[in-house]
Amino acid sequence: MTENKELKIVMLGTGCPRPEISRSGPAQVVFVDELPILVDCGEGTTDQLMKAGIAPEEVNHLWFTHLHSDHTFGYAQFLLGGWELGRRELTVVGPKGTKKFHDNLLAMYDEDISYRLSAGRPQEGLLNVKIIEIEKPGLVESSLPVRVTAEEMVHSILTYAFRFEVDSKAIVISGDTAPTDSLVKLAQGADILVHDCCLVANSTYYPNHQDPEKRDLWNRISQTHCTPSQAGDTARLAGVKTLVLTHLFPKIDVNAVQKEAEETFTGTVIVPDDLQAISVEKKEKQSIK
Ligand SMILES: [Zn+2]
Ligand SMILES: [Zn+2]
Image (tube, rainbow, N blue to C red; front, side):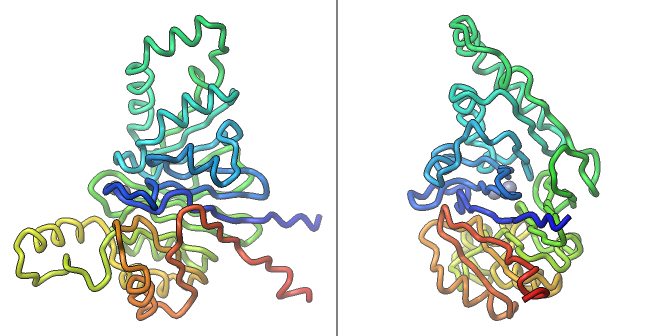
């Protein structure tokens, strides 16, 4: 009756397509009480899970925001490694193309998988992975004890942001996106908004740069990603409590990113390190005590 689930997120990988030793590829885990839901699976995800004390074989749900390489590089190891460790059930949810991506991976490792199966390992958890492709924005049907809503973002391929909501607590993950009203709508009143922040604050990449290469890079990336101040705008318009910036460039000036976001958003801004956990505050504290 008084059941009130806890909601938190662990930032496994806060990096971007450019490799960096201190930031793993994009990935995070949403916890509904003890249940882990992996969102994206960038390079190093399995290592990061273990560093965070989360057994990869106990992660039975993976949601892909989109299928760009930086968000999927860790899938082979997560799939096969987690199976080796004993995972026998896995559901993968993602945009159209997720099934093809998964099947291609199995085909690529066909011989390896045949060998492992011939050595007596069960095929459950590997050959019977349940793949759900999101048909359209809106509520996504799933067996999870949390309501998940998807909205289409503005990126170079089909990308969904997700809102995980339970007991009037909500965590929203933007995936990769340029500024869009769809995210403002999806993130309304959320406790935590994890937001793409791929453009460096006060950057050498900003427009009007003398170097045409850097100007071009800005023009390209700014069509598909956000600056800290744009992320702050979305957080403000959506009225979220905490903005968490991710998808960070190597050697980024964390303080400058934080400062720039705080110029457009007066709530809490977090520029996390890998493995940082952020919990949604318990709401009964405010109302009961
Ligand atoms: Zn992307
Ligand atoms: Zn990305």
